[in-house]
Length: 570
Image (cartoon, rainbow, N blue to C red; front, side, top):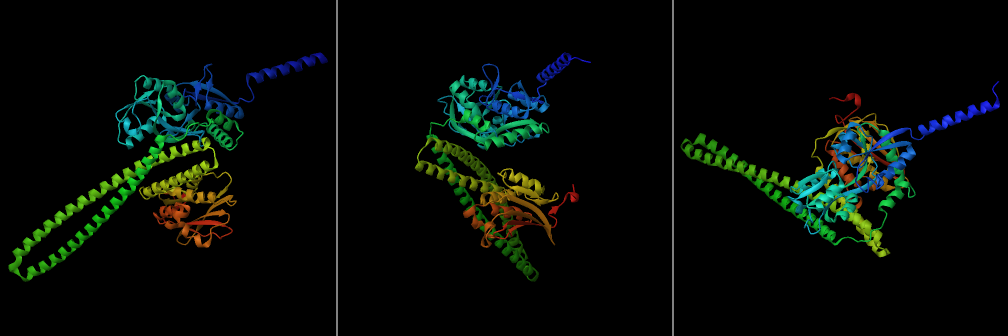
């Protein structure tokens, strides 16, 4: 029989063994996550003690604490880290932005951690004030950074050819430029501000490419990591007491003591001038097209008259042999005239084609400049609201923001309407298109019930805009709307997609007006544009809900323009 003292020793030894095992294998750290550590302060960097630091490092450590991750930081340059991520040597990158090329190799978080824009920095007295001043200049960029490609695209739109020089670190970019190795630097504003002060460079008036920074993982891997990060950021953004919110306040919470720079008022004037120029050129081109069309119509009438006259002449030749020679010479003259007219018509068609190309280029440059101007002004107005006190000033700034939102909506409508019908229609899964559309909206408080059995329809690539505008109207309408249901119904000559939304519904006298062009001035152009997009492939839309009980949009798709998974042909 074992004594009580011996039993106590056995129990004590077992407890010590358990504690030792728990120290070797912590219960909370149930997975290793290898993270790229680059040096792009203040987002990510190594501090004076050799420890990882920065905004993204603090956020990731808080996420790891909640999820039970063991973070392993692997140092390297930005370009080296991208290569390691593609090869699966690391699991996660921080403070990065997606591009179409990158999305072929990596998966990105959906929730933005922070919004930034690209900024050009230059030495004092450089004379670099606009994008045109960089033509032929040497511009330093970070190797593997999205700013390199974005700056190339921005320069191409203005027809300039700067020379890009790549460096591996942020310090190299700014030190080389400060010592004359480059004329200017392109970097994100949050990374470039401190470095510019450190090396004596200044911000220029050139800012573009508003984007968001988040996280990336290898393609098709570590989806649970991205999901946890998205959930953390979404929850933190809506909670003013969260660690995410406090961290944002810590790094960017200081109120700016400066007001809107004077040069941006010149920038606004330039934007307005571009808009006026766009309108004037459009009117001139329209008048020229009308004139040329009238001229072509007149020439066609003359040709018809000449053809009729030739028939009369030919009948006269049968009857009057003595006039054959004269009639032949007359026909030769008419033939020459017809050839001259044909050549003139060809030149007219070529002129119209060139005019359309120039107008398309003008539209692209104008939309880009207006979008960048609106983005800059929105940010500066927000800063001015924090810096300016007094009810009267706040009221004017609020009105300014409302005007800017109106300009953004008008610009978005113009761009979409310009692109309407330019691309070939395609077969599209309705459920997927619906999900893509609501991903741009706050749908957190609205339940969804989709029963479409994999239905696909043949429609313009802008089909996503149709569902986006319908759902945006649902959210803007408010009135306790909390559910959306998508179903379909077989019809005699096609199929109807039914979009049911609970709520007050739409009054009878407005059911058709919401799709008309005149309604644009009251609630925006969304539903008018939706009907135009669907009509390209013969699809129609109407509102048939009962006022007081809810809203129902019926999208009728005719035979041959819809199919189910088992009916696909490749």
